[in-house]
Length: 205
Image (cartoon, rainbow, N blue to C red; front, side, top):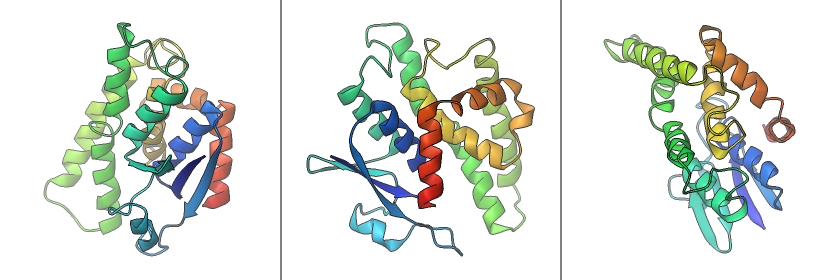
């Protein structure tokens, strides 16, 4: 059985969604953020030295990083159901979106989270974060023009990975500036497995 070490209000929710889509047996081990610092509890360091989530355990292996977890689980349990064929032209797009979520897309949003948490004025970072968010999300919004999903007009791991990015965008009230993203996110939220993941996030949050 897969064991998911789940931290509330984290990237871990998309792994719950993925596991629900895969239909595999899994167990959630929940952890809660500190109510003051909003940091992960020290108990997570007993699972992985970085003390971060998500982390999964399977067959004696510990796997961290949500992108790696997503690739691993899809390759093992649903290589064609939640990803394009590796020989197809769409596979490269799929890989790019999969990793875009944790690189270009999330960095400026995380900077905005940290700036808001710190509460102090900045000389450069705040303006940089806002400019990067606009640039990156405009790109995504344009790529979604006339599309239902990111790749092959069907749900893939790329959509599941990007969902967390749009959750953060929503929390900052920025989604209204990107109508294609807003429509896309609303559609993702209709997936029964997404709704189940949201229920579990609330349950363990």
